[in-house]
Amino acid sequence: MLKDTNWDLFTEQALDNTIANITHYLNFCLDVCCPKETIFLKFDRFSSSQLKKLRREKERLFKMKNKSGVKRMNTLIKLELQRLNALYNQKFLSCKSPSNMWKLLKEITGGKQMLNDISVDVNMLNESFICIPANVMIPNSNSVNNDCFSCFNTNDVLKCLQSLKPTQSLGPDGVPAVILKKCADILCSP
Image 1 (cartoon, one colour):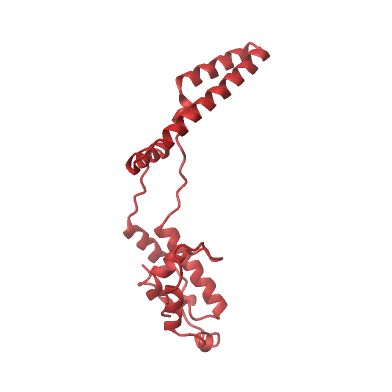
Image 2 (spheres, rainbow, N blue to C red):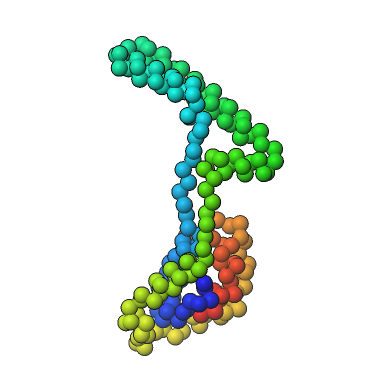
């Protein structure tokens, strides 16, 4: 995906603008290739038959305007939830093998698997660059600063990117170090 990028679009401006544009582009590539998905947990422990009975009884007492009965049912519901949570935590922590742990995690998350078609992602990225207006594509010879990259060369950038520790946290640009390190050979050349 990065090999097909027209990097000349990024280098026709001042260094600060170039860095900002490349950062935004890399963030866009990450969003396209690694979409973030909100996972809603499925709490089966909250749908136990005993808990349903207690809630129905609480509703019945509430309709009868029995305040002391509602308070008593609230206490019983809280105790039942604590019991169910303790059972759930015990079940979760009792997983000794990784395969059982993954089965339990799939059960919690509803067994959703992320299907990712790379060709769709690449096509989306290509479409975004095809839709650039024509006046952006034409370089303005007055605004081009040829010496904005004169203080460092391709090898310096490559060494810097390869020296990154992949376990480091995100920088201010939000791009993970592991992505920069893996794409160093592509990113180092203008």
